[in-house]
Image (cartoon, rainbow, N blue to C red; front, side):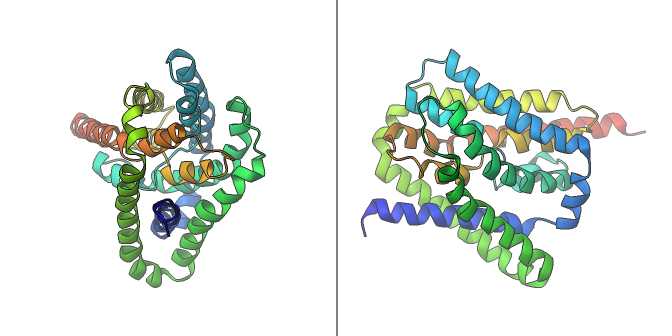
Length: 287
């Protein structure tokens, strides 16, 4: 087995473990309750799949990026909500029940809408929607559904295996980053001067600013949860999607791989900022 094959296996484990752990952590009753809100549904869908792709296209027009990096940014714009969202929600002191509703909605939305929108947004992409959607169904949606099913029908089992699955997800993430550095360090270094990182950071900040500022009746904790949900990215879905490309440009791979470690710093900073706002809101509302 060569290093590239090992990387492919680790990438699959990364996706399955992260989405499986997400499913094991979801409270289906709370999720259904929150999804009954037309406001939550509308904002999640609007920010994620109208504002997100629009902002992605805008950044590809105003930043002088080479085509592979621009393609990577467009894929980046179609995969909202990181599997590690609960971590950022806790750090931000945001609304966990709202986040629990948004997470499965984002995964289902990504599996359905990314295959439909990617061929429309990416110039020259001739892949069919099914070619992109099939791997997403198998390695993104299916692990989530299995995790949720275990949580619903065997809650004790879910609670027992969750720490192990979470640990596997963490280990697979570290292994993935290690393989990235080992196999693609030249492309990663080349991306430093490509405006790719700047585009990712601007995208994240833009999504967070708009969704947090225009809460349309959501309270501060809910706005923080919404902003983190729509500005974080699902690295698993992005990696799975580009495996369907007939010829994978190394610079496109670099752009997607940078979307795993680089934005993490921005997401943590945003979570800290939202936590500071939560403190001020609590003091202001105190009698």
